[in-house]
Structure formats: C-alpha cells, structure tokens
Length: 206
Image (cartoon, rainbow, N blue to C red; front, side, top):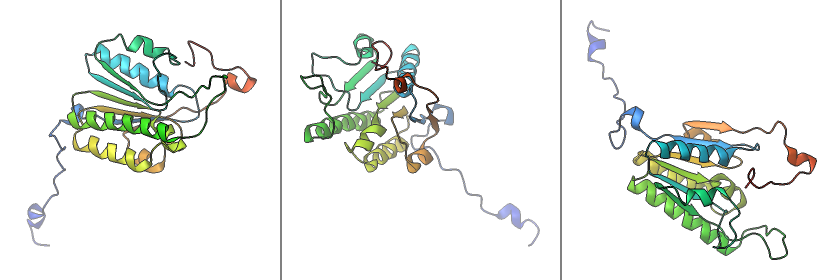
C-alpha cells in the first residue's frame, strides 16, 4: 500500500437520526416482560415521572376496557384527573353477569385492539407525546388480538420519528422485539402468593 493511501480511504459516516435529534434526546424503546408481577406497575411509575417533568403522555391499555360503569383498574380513576396524560383504555368487558370470566377473542375484542393500535400509530406519527406506553401490547399478541407485524410497524414509525419514549409491556417478548428494543427488563417470578390460592386484591393487583 502506498504511503498516504490510508488517509484517502473512505470512512463510512454514521447514519443521521431521522429527525436529526441528538442521541440524548432520541426516544428509546423499552420492553417490560416476564411472568413476574410488576410490568404495568413499572410503566405507570414511568408515566408519573414523565408527568412530573411536564411531558405529554399517552397510555394505551390493551384488553383492559371500560364499559362506563365497571372500572376494574383503580389507577385510571386517578389518571383521568391528571393533566397531561391521554388515557386510551381498549377492550370489551370480560366479566360475565354471573361473575365468571370470558376467555377467548371475539371480533369485538379485535376491533377494540385495533382502536388502540390506531391511537398509538397516530401519536407516533404526530410526535406530540414524549412518552407513549402500550400496556399489555405483548399479551395482546399472545392471545391473538393482533400480530407481531403490527408491533413491528409501530417500531418502524418510532424509528422514523423517535420523539417519544416508547414502552411496551406484557408476557412473552419475542426475539425480534428484544433485538430492536433499547431496554428490556424481565420480571421473573421467584415467589408469588397466587400460588398459595390467594386471589387478586384491590389496591394491589387492580
């Protein structure tokens, strides 16, 4: 190699962030997954912290609907009164009149999940929110409300306009999602009182 050839060698420049954001300002992708308790709780704590900084927050909850009468998730009674957070609960009532739980996915459940996806897509395109939480999005994939490809499309939107911090929660994060995320936390169950027969308790589980 001739002297000085190395100085003429082309150096591949690092790709610019799509909206020319500085690395410290670019929103990252979080995944909170695993069989242990705490995924939604962790995401709600992040919402509170973001609101404390004056960030606009979008919280989309999948398969945790509200029929206008029976509010099963007490945190939403508080969240509705906090300025700065847009709350989008989706899903149909799963408690039957006789007190049993309705399992499975019906067309109305899928339609509700699509409504949540549309809200998330709109927020990521618009870029007004600094934190976007998709609570139980992974669980929605697991039960068949929508597919991994819909989640991948949301990640593509975020990559094109990474203004918001994007958080996804739920069971069974798949390898491609883990690869694309910037932060993955797995809640591992070491011990749980459910295994002793104790059921969900108000103020703790809902």
